[in-house]
Length: 298
Image 1: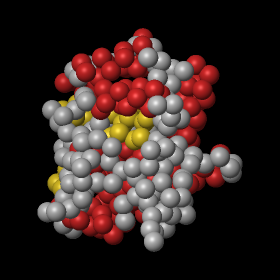
Image 2: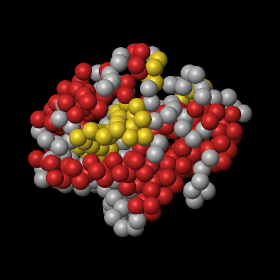
Image 3: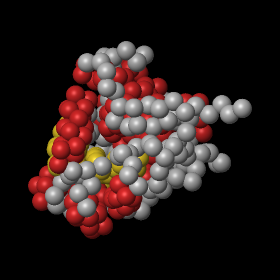
Image 4: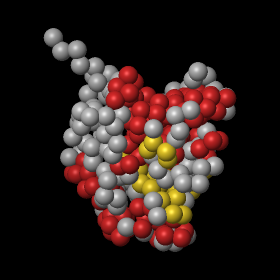
């Protein structure tokens, strides 16, 4: 007899907005905690991005996605595409929160034969829809996936996570044009704008502002919010869903975030794209995270 869990998790419909916000905030706290625990396994990694984007991951998984934790390939699921493969540590934490990956498996992060490699690989990890690494490919795949789902008559939605550094890539903007041309209302993109990439600050590598005007000019419903404010994120995703239902237009949510958010020790690190954290600092990071948390997740 199969023991496969086919329970469907759907976006929260009941409860007050404050109930939903609290659920998301609690999930974001735990995602940050998971990320620190995973980072300690390697002593380094893209921990700052995971902390900064935790509120985005939490909002999507706790309030937007329809999925089955025990059946990650269920055809009726919404798709979450991680274009930025190096953010995998944050995504794994979200998958654990969603029940798709066991929390205890997070300890294997980046180890030999682990299903959780340092860069996201769809062939290894349940719930990882695409392999990320070569930046700028995610939105193109998302457009094709959203178009294919529509042709199949599916009501499933596609969520694509990008970084601000990916806006340097021409393929991102070609995909944006394609999404508008096909009026893919089932596609929502989110851009983590943390103003930092491997070669330095994004505005010194290639200035992409005014970003919101650009997305709007490409025919997308564009919103810009504080990506570390769960209230603002919930409102933005709710607005995107409502707008898509009435206008059939792709949506983008531009999320201004802070690398290392929630851990003051890491928020002020000068070289924060790929962090090396001393052995004695990990517990300090966890204590700072817990001390700054005002919710019930503890």
